[in-house]
Every structure is written in structure tokens, then in C-alpha cells.
Image (cartoon, rainbow, N blue to C red; front, side, top):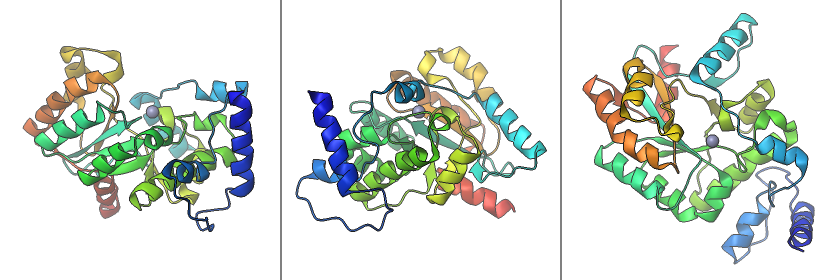
Length: 280
Ligand SMILES: [Zn+2]
């Protein structure tokens, strides 16, 4: 029954609001929930086997991302992506993926406020849809918001049109809530190819990857974190963390303190991108 209703809703939304671009005229609608549904071509959640397979989590390690970047360079392929800030500057970026999550996002924001650090949040559209107030809190605290797709689907496993729909749905949702156009995105799992990056670029989004991964989802413990990341921090590094994992809250103060002690300062992703442009 629910599937039938969902399918009907989807058909209605698709028919009345084809994904014809950001400038399409929409009739005013008093209900915030209905407004949000109308701009989400990725809604409702799909259950078909193709989509379920694409939803399976993938993950690229910093080493795999570096190897992929090296392969592209060997082939003379220059993809517009941000893999690192200016290596001549002692700057780092903290990035938090997968949020917002009630109960945890607030704690993350409190730590960042206490440490006086600005970060970048790559949000998932379906989470923003459920918790728009948390998106407003992230923005009000002065952090940068990035697009982490709508459904957290592996973008290399879906057709170009659906990649665009995923990114566009979150762009439109954030625009509706904050009036803000997003400029940065991160593909789930860091899994990208030429198509994923080009589609993002066409939507005005720069794809951001990472150089350091503390593995906050694996509950590694303090000494492992120290060994895995902190001693390896390098200029222009982009640190992958997660919004929605308790372990992140435990390791975040250590990461910030350690970096500060070693002369690094934290910047948002837009500052890091600026540092790269200045280098040229
Ligand atoms: Zn993610």
C-alpha cells in the first residue's frame, strides 16, 4: 500500500515538476514538507535492486585517492577537483560527512565553537529534509555547507541523469532552507569518475576529496588515531570525519589540539580552494 502511494506521489511530482533546471517557476505552497518534496527528484526512496546495489557503501582510502589522482595525471586527464589545499601553507580543513544528525550535530558544533574552529559539513539531502533546523544551526555558526548527494548513493554506479538529480535535489533543498547556493560537493565514499566530476562541475559544484582519514567510524582508540593521522598531517590537508558518529566527538578535540600545537590553522573548504588558486 505504502509503495503504491509512494509511486503515485513520485509520478505526480515527476509529472508536475520535471527536473528542468533551477529556474523553473513553482507555485507557492504553504506546507514546508510539500515544498521540499517538490524539489527532490530523488524522492521517494527507491527499493528496486539496481538502486539498492548502488546504495551499498564504498570507501576510498587516502592512498587509493592519491593513486587515482596519479593515474589521471599520467593519462593527462585534468579533472576539476580539490584534493588538497596549498602545500606551502600550514592549513588544514576539517570536513564532516553524512549529517545532520539530531543529538550529535549539536555536540559537534559545541566542540567547534569551544575550539574556535570553522569547518565544512557535507550534508546528505534526505537528512537535511528531516532536520532543516540543524542545517540552519550549522550555517548560523559560520561553517561551510557542501553537498554529499541526496540519498548517499554511490554515484559511479548510477546514470549521469541520476547523478545530476542527486546533487540537484540537495542543492535545491539547501537553497530553499537557507537561500544559499552550494559550491562544493563530495561523492559518497570518495568514489568518483570523470562523469561524476563533470556532472558536478556543470551544476556549479567543485568536487572535494580528502587526504587524511582518522577512521572515526571504526572506534580505533586514541593511540591508533595518533599513529594513523596526527603524525602524518601535512600542509593543505583535508581531514575526513563524520557527523553522526559518537567516536568523532571523542577524537575531535585531540585532532584540533594536536594540529594547533604543531602550528596548523584550520580553514573551511572555500578558504582551502582559495589557497590553491593563489598558488597558481
Ligand atoms: Zn558519506
